[in-house]
Image (cartoon, rainbow, N blue to C red; front, side):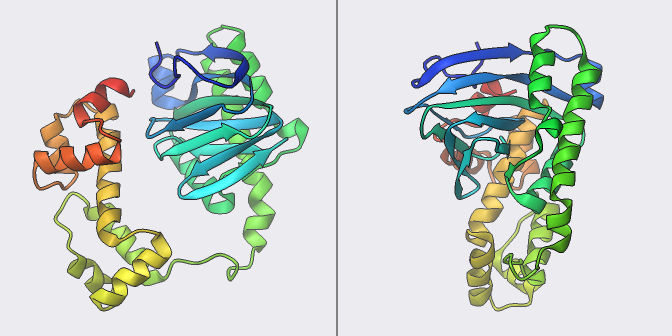
Length: 287
């Protein structure tokens, strides 16, 4: 049984699923698919996930779906391609009868490619039919052959096509259109990413930003969307999730490495973030 696929999925009219088990070498070197398929769904089909150590890409062939991701809500319709990092909370649901293809994937440099695509265009893309090779990737999965390298090449080609599709828009966009994060807040974000395992105080962060504590907190929330304290906690929890599924470190060690002052505090914050799932249970459920 796959924890990430519910036993009961209301709204599914038809589904075809293909699972793939790549080699150890592939997991170390290549992009690789975990599973994928094609669904025909209708209201009330809905999936809500807190965390999964993978990325997912959708191709909407017909109909429309509502997505909630990174404090955004948007609709994807026919011919849209949607790319999400499943390590972030995400929810998607059918707005009408919808046919979509998808696959979960990960691998070396996948995070870097995702980060670049999100910076350029966000989550939604479109490609000319001849450049959209998502159906080809699913056909390779359906063939039930050990073709790790060929699948990896197709994933890389798809990501490359997505990057190229954004090139002109990204290079020519007006910098004033986007709400740019001020350099003083960028400095704080960089400091947090490099020092989250150490004690971090609001006074430290405001000093780095060279803004008074009161105005720093207001400015940080304006551009980042949450308070500095909550951002640090969220960042630490995300790093802890990665360690839980990617290493064999003890929960106590992970708690310490991610900057929590006690394992009790770590478990409390982690459980609040995951709807009651403790770090130990999370490690057993996730891969």
